[in-house]
Length: 500
Image 1 (spheres, helix red, strand yellow):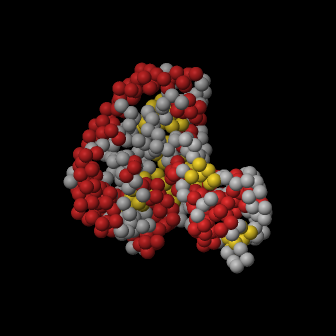
Image 2: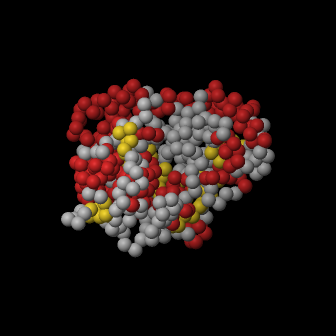
Image 3: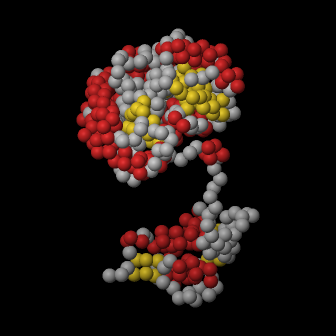
């Protein structure tokens, strides 16, 4: 059965031709899916006013006349008119209801004219679009942990206990720096596992590592100042620097990590230096002790701050874990950044920054303006997860799993990847970097792989000033089962050979 509609003849309102046309374009429907008559009438008149079909000054029919013509209750029309009046679309008076003038000096636009795109900040033009679709968990994607192996039941119990113990008290805003219990748990873990010098008062909880990086930029730099970033290096760090309107200087990475020269300090003295010293992303190098100490010395001399991103150093596969640079020297000008996206799961969105002692008190007033304490139940559950030993046990299981997977992926590359290549990294983390000759374009290979259910990253896209040796693929093995590697590598090899 067709829904009933309330229509009008072309001459329904001879004194109000604009209203007749507006109502004929979308007759009122008498079915539940269309909504109430009042809502339909209100939205129809509002849209006609905004689109210019009812120009400013147009007089609307009286409520009685319109109600009789549409065969609806007069109260329905009155309520719609009143709502339009409250919102400023019409001006009721004794002489009748007229359409208000919404903007002065605006050029008139026909309803079908395209809407011009709004202007965006100039800094957005310098941020290249992401290649990987958000949320995609396809094979070989770097940076995604083994989600199926996470102890979800144990996490659920910790979350339930946090909700039971705090109830509605934790639904309000918390400490801008994060839940004190979680900050204390993180400080204890970092001191033991990473050699970080800190106490709970210096830990600030953030919405993932990306917000931690953006916070460092806001706290310590001014627009136009210089930031050094690793090249090739983490794209998110560059985005954070661009968001602060900093001048980004790419500093090359070699087999020993960040590799600067005296000329760099003279020509481009930095305010901020971003580095991943324990496992350089994406090439896998380790910044030597000599370079770490030299970098700290030079940063002090030039009044610079070092941002140490320790993104996945919990997963060391060869030898003992490499301690954090932050803990090498007392009072080092280092802000230590980390998150639980790799060690727990990305959707948790909990990161942190450990501030130098001399900064912690000085920036506290700013933190109260920049941050709002939230996700309190999740933070309390995470604190218990760490305190109970569940976190350490989970890390141990994942180290063994990732060590096994990277060995299987290495073997698959050696056996089935029939393209000249060199494997870099693999001593830690959840990815391998495969360097390719220039005749195998990495961006095109990555794009072709995406069409076949794989999401390796093109190494060249991590560089601001790509060199020939920056051609390659970054292969994630964290969330891909080892038994799939042979078939995946064979397919990737064929794709690469086909694009030569």
